[in-house]
Image 1 (spheres, rainbow, N blue to C red):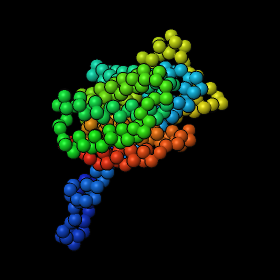
Image 2 (cartoon, rainbow, N blue to C red):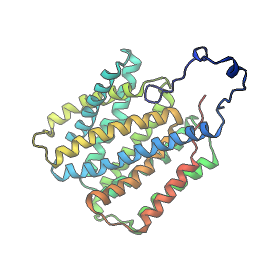
Image 3 (cartoon, rainbow, N blue to C red):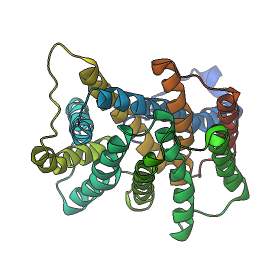
Image 4 (cartoon, helix red, strand yellow):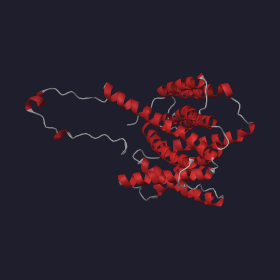
Amino acid sequence: MGSLFAITAKPLDTLKLSDSAANQPQKVLSPGSTTAASTISFLPYFMVLVAGVLWGMTFSLARIATEEQAHPLGLAFWQAFGGGLILLLVCLIRRSWPALTMDTLKRSCVIALLGTAVPGTMYFYAASRVPVGVLAITVALVPILTYALSLALRADQFSNRRFLGIAAGFAAIVLLIAPETSLPNPAMAQWVLLALGAAVFYTLENVYVDVYIPKSTDMVVLLMGGLIIAGVILVPLVATLDAFVPITYPLGNPEWAILGMIVVSSVAYVIFLYVIKLFGAVFASVTAYVITVFGVFWGILLFNEQHSFWVWGALILMLLGMSLVKPRQRT
């Protein structure tokens, strides 16, 4: 499972048993036992929950930064390049490096474009013009598109249970927005469409990682390369539009928001990529529902936004959807 989730065990020949103990029947924990099964089945849901909670925070952090006039391209650059530097430090500690091959470069470039440079910029532009809750809701398009595209590419099989799980999650989003379906300003519609376009890029990245990235790939190394490349891609645009956002001391609200986005998004991104490889792109896409619900929650916590019981009903449906979308078994 890579270095983040490794299980070590002593070889049998290193175990020293007394003669009496050796003659006694040994209790062996089978893979199908209750303890082993509960540990394995709990892990994917826990990973999805952590990634969603962290990623849901980025909408509020983006709003804090854009309210202080930080340029969207400058934010996208820092989120990419800053996150790449953090993961580079992790790689130095782990002494793990990407193989210098064309395949590695191609995969990193795809991750950079589909998962960071393009959709990140689109979301940050939308964040300066769309309320946090609306922006978080647009992420719900990702599971629907991921499931459809995975079926089209025969990367996944149709399952009534999983389809119902995704439908329950989608119903949670509808329940969340049904009481107030109209936007505060009709002019925001074009920016909502821009955010939905970003969701399309995230969908393409999900399926690409699931289908074309080998399971043995070190996701930390892959993401480190993708984030740094994304930052390099954005440099000419940042320079041309004079969009660079300096981080100066003492740190103000925009600086703290940028640093928070760098750390939070990097950790969530690594967890998310591992979920794709271990449990499939469709199950990983359920993270979008967690992001949506907790995007609203962080708005309540950080901006004192008030919401009705519809939000809590949506949370219950989202959890039901997660329980129905079983992780795909890999051998």
